[in-house]
Image (cartoon, rainbow, N blue to C red):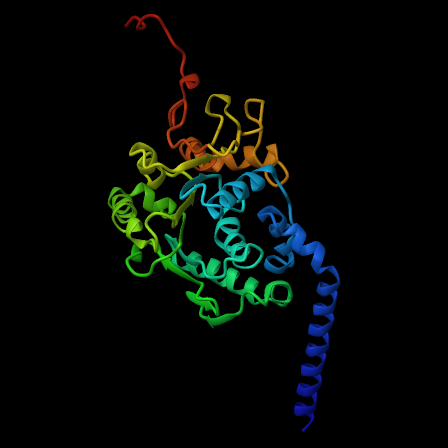
Length: 328
């Protein structure tokens, strides 16, 4: 009896809290909806729902990624390649916030997404994050008239307007289609070093991805990854000139590789070595992490050019240059 009473009290308390939250959101709804007209604004407003215990830290690269995703939404880009270092919010931006923004604030709840990663764990993680954001009281209070979920599985869910999101391991990208195919890190670090695994992943990208689109003319493919090998999926896209818009942002600025894209974006940095995201990765952290990574990994994962400028294990400066062989 006492347990039933406590349970009933808990239910009533939860309902009161839900009503209070909805009331607070309603009072501020006009401002929130106005801010969420841009993807960057939506990220700022929705952050507390996705990461309630983590403070949001903004960087200009977030604006850059969001601008290019907005261009996909507008139909200006149908093939987008994003190369950025790890830890720069690429998965959250491309796989969680962007599709949630299209469904709600942009009024495209019919859009269908197919998300793939080398790991089933990561595909499931981002599926779950988007599902939980869309199902949240905050989101439903603002856009519940447009988007309500009907299926809520971890690897696939759908809404009442025929929109859906499915997550799959990249190696099993043979079923399902989407208006947006989001490929987030198709290679693992170890897999990219294995010629057999790397070739298999590239083959899947070349032979399976183009056939996963709902509309061959208008559907979009977004590839977001850190560079791991010269012949990885990004390298294949660039070598074959597959027509992808290329947003490439290294951890440390290299003026001779300044990124420019067709939508008018130009990497705003001016000084050699200027950091991409100093708010989270200040100089001390970057230099600390370079030591265990080594020059090959730094060149790929940090600098997005998987062949170090000055070689690998041995650097030219490690040796004394002489004009003649020593006698004897």
